[in-house]
Image (cartoon, rainbow, N blue to C red):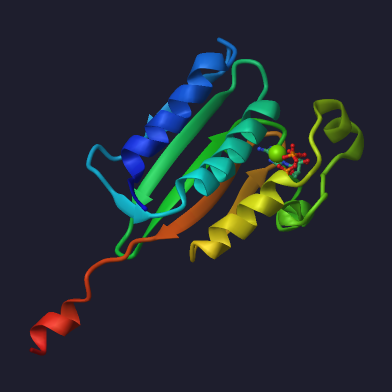
Length: 160
Ligand code: ATP
Ligand code: MG
């Protein structure tokens, strides 16, 4: 189905805003205009729920989480940045593997199974997008994913 990603993303963030603790701040950098993407809304919601839960789980007191959407020519880039513990460089790609968790002791304390990002990757790839992480230890983490924009094929018109 076609989804206006700007409005939809706000709706997802609103749901987390209601239950988050007061000492975590949310910042939204989302275009005002509608951006239509063709997605399975339930599946993308699962992706965002996991990425945002992770950001909250690993955020320090007083931390800020920033939500961004950038519109490029043929895709949108969605990102969620936190100011948490970060992920060591060597683990950046591995966190998308099933059951992979950076610090076993810490992860066990925080709960979860280590499947969230593996599922997120599967869903994003199935939508024709890509997903990756950038991080600085003790500074924070940003998870990015893209979704393709299906623009009309101009060529078909001009050649007629
Ligand atoms: P689940 O999502 O199944 O509840 P999980 O959150 O541990 O469990 P993933 O979401 O797949 O599993 O994340 C894998 C690992 O990547 C985490 O255990 C954690 O070590 C690391 N990680 C993910 N997101 C962040 C983040 N925002 N900051 C720091 N580490 C992170
Ligand atoms: Mg998770």
